[in-house]
Image (cartoon, rainbow, N blue to C red; front, side, top):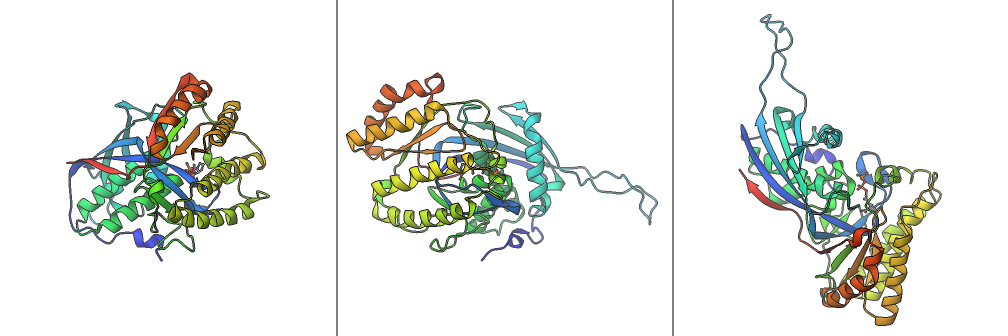
Length: 378
Ligand code: 2P0
């Protein structure tokens, strides 16, 4: 069993003045949903996701040791001396300074400073971009926080080259979680579990782990076509949605249900039973939104076209027997999930029947991926 203290490092063996790294990290789509959390970003229930491949954040982290400023009087020498202990960073989004993103990063750095003591010693320049359109309604917090966490771990590994790969990826996921819960599922691929579950060996509330059990070939090339129904700002953020699970009338039953659904998915991943897979995945999506509709205050993130798409998918599936299903994130967009062999027919169906429900006819083709990747190490 790991505890958060396991991620507080001992003294570093190396020192380094400046350099840069660049990592990409993908988005992920939950099959069993995380909705509700305890203090310190501990999930109220376990979740499992497919790591995506195309929807990514690419982040470059440049770092340079700070000057040490003297700003108070030393008792011994009478000289002013206090080290510069503020967190210091610049943030660029697609090459342009982006002040609005800074508070979230500031909060993230403050949360993780105890686990990365070097943070206050450097000035950082974070240069980040997404491969998916800005404000597409695809949350960039998962991929964004994961990409930043990977870069920070690269720096920690440079300071402590003895670090094992296991520790590197586990701690990256641990840090990403402190930025945004679902981000801890974006470090690795292709199926990731986050949260303690009795039947998933090594599972933890502190970080995501690669699903350790058998996965049938039926799932290995799964596709996720994301239909962009509404690209506007959500009325209620996920952070507030999670909070509304406190004192929610159905919370405890829901948390138990997530354990049960993950338990069933373990068998389904092994057997490859796509009909059973569909039942769990669609029920999870609708339950997530049911939790939103039954919280106080209540809210609805689905749009009329979300329901049009769901009904069209059900009709198409009934008629064709193709094992296509939907899932939803905390928003109106619809993720259409299906095996690769059915891709031509599904894309034809999307183009002829669903694209009219998408804002500006936009959709994004993605598929199951392998997790974050190092792009540059300087
Ligand atoms: C998930 N979602 O499992 C669920 C399902 C959205 C719907 O995790 O407050 O951005 O940063 O921990 O991770 C979205 O919430 O929330 C989310 P924070 P996060 O993917």
